[in-house]
Image (tube, rainbow, N blue to C red; front, side, top):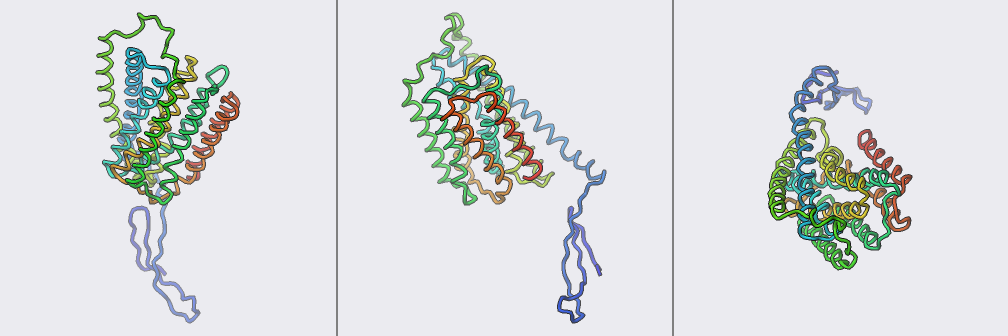
Length: 369
């Protein structure tokens, strides 16, 4: 017999008298918890009201990330032309470093707001996105698939995959400490040191077929510097908006902040990188696509996460949302590495497999994660 009940949030607590299991006819006092599923119209109306502003902020911030990331990368490429940089160096520094700026500032903003696990989920989800969806789309757009015959590309891909796995190994105990952050940053410098020890491989100037008149003037160079600075400020602003809205989504849906970063934020932040990789695929620049992907994965997994961990150690209390994330990251990384090391390219058929893998990841996170 229930003689008292109290409703708190979406849970109903009831105090009840039930027969004792001893069979002596006594009754014992227990606390029963029933979970109500608030699926009525009033609930959905209130949820819509709660999410309207965060959703607007998130979509606006994601759009601002696309535009500002596009402006920054294009300005960086023009600066690279003016300075006469080589093509792979352009890909690594302008494409990868320029593209991970949103992740870096999202990570710094999440650390400042005391939710650094948002950055951890974002980067795991971002790596899955780049290795499957972005690679697959680019391979489909290129007539012969994504070619990977260079030894430097193969070795660089191995470094990038190792960088993607390293945070998962360091956080196996549920914490990415400041010492772990230092290890990640040291691995980043190791990667850069190795990269420039292979400078003899980077003999192709960026857009070397251009006429001298196509090289930007000094005035355009100064304008691009101003665009880069302004773009950085817009990226910082949009990163703050994404962090605030992600926190609101987590509270509204009862999801861990890691799960929000793994899918929602990873897609929103990954748009600029995917957009730029697709634009390179349309121009047939397979070499730059690979340089950008390798750099993005390596930099975000080491420098970005290492910086966030130094600012605020990342404690992952609930590893459940990352179970499928880790599984799919391993599948995506090993598939990518197999294509690079043995098949020397990603064909159209393999691209479809990678796209299917990312679709399966999304469905798994939505229905099982």
